Image (cartoon, rainbow, N blue to C red; front, side, top):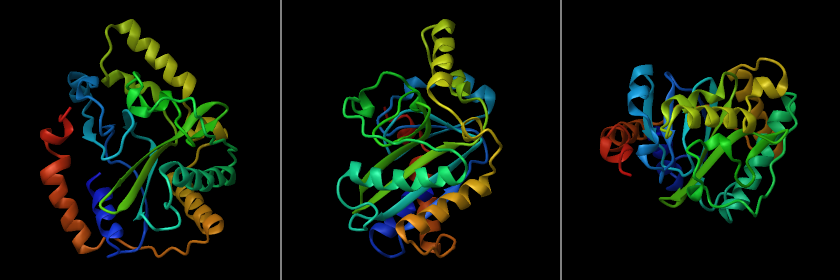
Length: 255
């Protein structure tokens, strides 16, 4: 999360090119949305499992990051990919993601759902229980969960593509009134979300999924990528953000 924000800062100020970052997580990590209460987390169970907790700079509900590919896009507000309204940029990016999934043998949909309430008003603590506008679904089940923040003169959109595994695991580290409600939440999650393996009927590696997304941005948007590492400035900003923000209780438990 700290590196995503550091990339947002450098790309928004045009000190570095707009960036597509593709990554995975070293240990299972629960991320809370920017405005989600920390009371949604069962801290005892989280610690018992050795999973980490972090709060995202973007909105939405809780995501368990494991067995997944995470993407982030950072760019200045006037970049053609993210210019216009939030929904307009969401739609452009969703088209690219859909094409990537088609190349992996998984046709999906991403539609405008005007009847959906804002993400922060949903009562369910699990992000993958409810698709928002232009999020990617397969057979009615959410496949990619994404969120966006606009600040510092730029845009950060990042999202989660579960490659495999049991998506109901997240309910084991969230709070519910009783075991029955927890079990109901697990059942609901499996009914309304899916993994790429389940949708495609085969195992898809992190590298294969990454290459499909890179190729889709190239063919659909005409982007020519330069593979690179974060600059020294971005790494220093990341370390400072980790120290002052993302590793601190004042940020992760601010609500």
